[in-house]
Length: 297
Image (tube, rainbow, N blue to C red; front, side, top):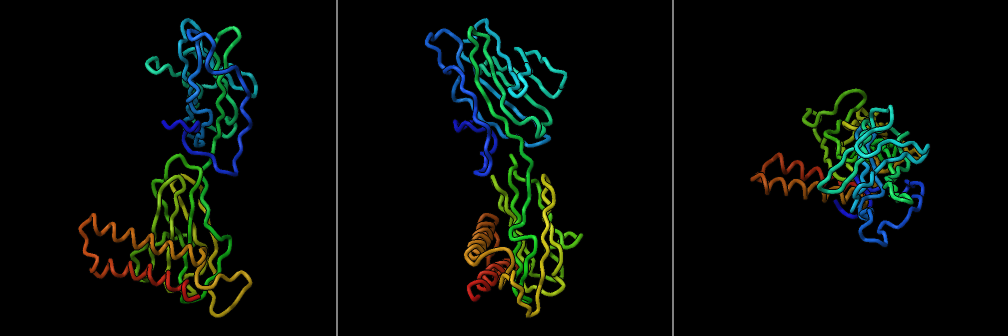
């Protein structure tokens, strides 16, 4: 585990945790006394409904005991390997080979967020504080809730999934209540998904028509559905009009086009595909057309 002080996801800039209380120094003056490994993460982010693991590592424990205490109500949760709460979601786990004492919180809820204290029964007691943040994965389609695009141009929708310890297993796109088919007779529809700390799915619909208007939804496996309403206009010019495409700026779509081209050629190279075949050429033409649409605005 990296020594960043944060387990699972790093917190976003907009998220703030309460300041951790200051305890005695981690390393005692007497090297034979128990002390905490200061490299153990002090900030942990867990996904709601999943297990959260808060760990402290104690050196030279000897005959002392380790307890976990919930700081907001000074509730003793565990002492040694024993649990002292009626809430069966809490469990103590000890790993002697690593000197680790872990508090497991099953099915973590938002109310579990806060500061937890790992305490050694020295005189005076020694404490190591860990802050737990419980997050709910969220999906957002950029530029909503309403997007306007010219008839004949390219609809570009970008769905971002944040605050997820792991990428979603799948992402479905819907038009109204119907799953969008990328192999339909309409043609010109493609999706590119990039997975990472923030997973992003791009929906491209070429040659927008009036029938392409309506509600579009992004439905990840691990987050609530996000929706926008797309208005395909035939010559109208509302104040909210985004000429040429919906959802991304010129530079953003140019970058997207490069991503698509890179993705396709990488797939061709490692899969022994022939980039001169019609299907691959059509996908490359799609990305180039989307980019040129913006360059000509």
